[in-house]
Structures are given as structure tokens and as C-alpha cells.
Length: 619
Image (cartoon, rainbow, N blue to C red; front, top):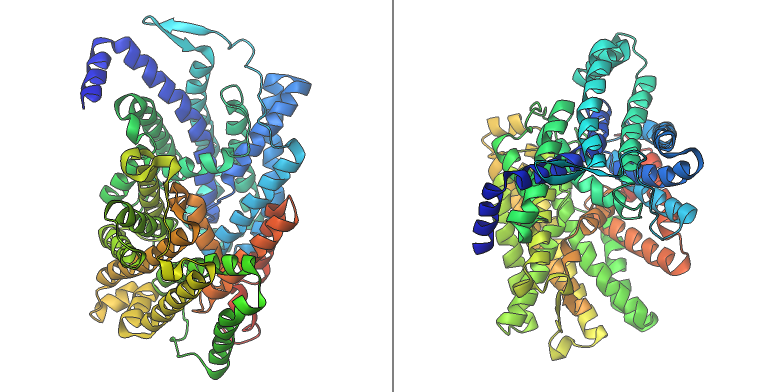
């Protein structure tokens, strides 16, 4: 508090310092706006939540470093932006055009596969080292503004944001192409009925979005070395900007980028321990007050986003029961035929299967897309670790405390979920997970920060790999069976009714919001148990348990297996974890192969692995 008061006094006494800090924030806001503008344009027209947009930003930076060496700085920036635009065209034509008819979640899966492909392709082309770019010619110095030095390049970036915003406004308001894009954003079906070639329109929009991302990456080169982490680092904040501004609103994206940039600049001074969480707190507050963002329009209910008219859930048939029994028998016999590594891998797999099943209960049964389900996984893991560390709780008590802690987090967060839906719900869940992750990173005194909490060992009877494997098998299998049972209960059926037709369900007296709230708490509890099992298997817990990549792992497992089947998360977990393990051990560029496999599944098998056996059946 003393530091906060002291900093406020400094800003009050030195307004020139505050101005310089604000200009720094505006310079960062311009780069963020370029990326976010492309993302919001693509979403506004194609409705694709492009997870690979950060990859275009990264590729733009790498291409710019090489191009600048050959043709000079400013031509190099233009070349990089155009090159990424061409990459965007190839991606749209070769991949996205084939998944537009699929449920939105499979478009997300395809773009995530693209992230993996581009990451390893970048590693192969440019190597693992960071690549520094030159400073912009003519903009290498600084100018004094009220006695404070401000870099010329920052002033240039501050001007770029409004300039690009103005150009986009002219394109969308004064050109025929722009008017068609706006028409497609408002009503795609009507635009198609008027004879507009939507394929070419979508390709052009995607190319423009990729070009803007590439331009943002290229202009970032004088401020930041091109590196392999740029894609995921920027995509989270770009999502925040797009959601806060309102999906599809370019002006909203600019306002949000300015807001986030300024908050970043002053947050470092005023709240140094909250720097990682401030932007996500802002997003959560904005979505609570204005569920559609600052300038966005209320989303139209789509019935859950993964198809309508699904038949009622029925108990598993004889064949499925037999397959389940065989799988359980194989897992029981695994230690007898597999080596020690197989037992360790299978222990991790069991925990992740329960994690995937809990996420599927939200997405498949409840129709609630979550980009931050790792929050409950991590809260459960930290809950068990903190109980063991500070309360000296034995493993049994810590494992019981984990689902309770995660469930309570679900109760708190579930209340917010009733206010938003669709992509906004997904983004709010991401904000919640990032807040939890930031607390784990920055609350050093309790969580250990990046060092995590070590020394988390099972009780003596389960201390060996074999004993802990059978404990994990018992708890994970019981958890998965409980989730399947819940899906068939009146609670699960009414949850599906609210997913497929909220208004009709409300008319029948079903409180959709209350059931969704309860579903978040239930799914969070099972995810928390999975996290605790995973933590005891590793003997430690780290902030990575709550990270975006962990949430993405859960999403991929569910989508890979199939959202429309209760068997999907089990198949998806086994396929994803098994394939990733084999590829990691067998080749250097394993992400590329895994990404291609994910894209292939998203394009060809839209029902996921569980849907392969149902191909040819009537929908």
C-alpha cells in the first residue's frame, strides 16, 4: 500500500512522467490493435475464432527480419505483411474453406492444429534462437516531451494505430468490397442469396486479417526479438482486446487496445504484483457489465454451437459395454505386460482422461464452451498441495479437499457464466483461468511462484508407481462413470434441453441458468480431482497446471474424441496423449505431425474419433 501511495504521489507531482508513461502505453496499444483488428474482422465475417492468428503475427516478425536484411527496413515491413497475407490465403483455401460447414468448435480445432504446424515450421526454417531486427531508420532517437525522453519509434507507432483504423473505416465504408463484407457480417445467408461469391469474400477477409497480423509482427521487430513464443503470448491479449471491444467491432478493438495498453503501462507502476492479471480482470468486469463488449452486439443464441436435433441420450449398448469392460481389463493388466514407463504414462493419462471427461460434461452435455477449464484442474492441484503443505494433510484428505476447492471455485465462477454465452463465455472462462494462473505465479509467499510446491508424495500404501497407478485408475474410472451417469439423469437431460433450446426449456419450467451454474461446479469438482491426481503423480504442482496450454490440451482431447458422444473424451484423451508421447520421443518436429493429424481429423472426421464408427448413419 505504501508503494502504491508513493507511486500515486510521484505521478501527481510529475505529470510529465505520467504523460511519458501514457505514451508508452499508447505505443504498445497500436501493435496490439493491428493484431486484434485482423482477428475481429475474420471473426465478424467467417465466425471463425482463429487460434492461429498469433502465429501470423510471429511469422510476420521472422519474415521481416530476413526481408529487412535484403531490401531495407520499410520495404521489408511491407514484404513481410504481404507474405503473411499470402499465407493467410493458402490457409483459408486449403483448410478453413473445408471446415466452414462444420460446427464452430471444429474450426477452432483446425486452427489449433495450424498453430502447432506453424510453430514447428518456424523452428525448422529459422532455428530456435531469437532473431534481433534492426532499428527503424530515421526513428532511432528520442524527443523530449515536457522533459521526458520519448522514443521516435513509439511516436510513430502511436500514429500507426489511428491511421490503420481510418484506412479500415474507409475500406469498409467507401468501397464495394467493404460494403459486401459488412453485409456478410450482418447476414451471411442474405448476402449469399443476393449472389455474392462468399468463397472469394471469405478468402479476401482472411487475407486482410493475416496481413494485419503480419504487419503488427513486422513493426514489432525494432522493439522485440522474433521468437517462438510470440504466437501464444500475443493471442491471449488479442482475444482480450477483441472481446472487450466487442466481437466484430474494429472501433471497439481500437478502444480496447488503448485501454489495455494504458493499463499495462500504469499497472507496472501501481500494481507490480498484479501485472499479469489486470487485463483479464478488466475483461471479466466488462463482460459482466456489458456481456457483448464495449461496442459489440448481443450474440444470437445458436443452440450450443455444435448441431441441433441430436437424439436423446441412451444407456450404452452391449457392444459399448463390452468395449468398456475390455478397456478396463487391459488397464488392470497393464502393469503385468507393460514396463515401468508404461505405468507412469498411463497414470498421467488416467488423470487427463478424467479432466477431458469433466470438460466434455460442460461442452457436450451443457453446450458451454470453456477456454479456461485448466483453472479447476490447477485449483484442485494447488488445493491438495496447500492442504498437504500447510495443514499437513495426508494424501487421502488432500485428494478429498481438491474437488471441494475446485467445486467452490466453480460455484463462484458459475454465477458469472449465466450472464454470457458462446464465444463470450469461452473468453470469460479464459479470463478466470488466467487470473488463477497469475495468482499462482505472483503470490510467491503461498504458492511458491514459478518454483511451485514440491514434495507432494502419496501415502505409504500408494507410494510406489504400481500402487498409485491403481489408485488413479480407481478414482478416474469412478469419476468418468459418475459423469456419464449424471448425463443420463434428469439433471443432465434438462441441461441438454437448455443447450439445444434455451427458450423452450425455460417455457417448460427448467431454470437453464441454475443448471448451467450447477454444471460448472460439478465439472470443476471432477477437474479438480484430476488435477490433484496429476500433482501427486508428479510430486509437485506448478503454475503450468493452470496455463492456457493445459486448457487447450483439454479442448483438443474433447474435440478429437467427439463432442457429441460420451465416449469421445475417453477416446480423445487416449489418442492425444498417446500420439503426443510417441511423437515427442520419436522426432524433433513432433508438433508439425501432431498438428497435421489434428487438422486432418477436423477436416475429414467432423464427429471426432467417436464419430468414425457412426459414419454413414442417418444424422
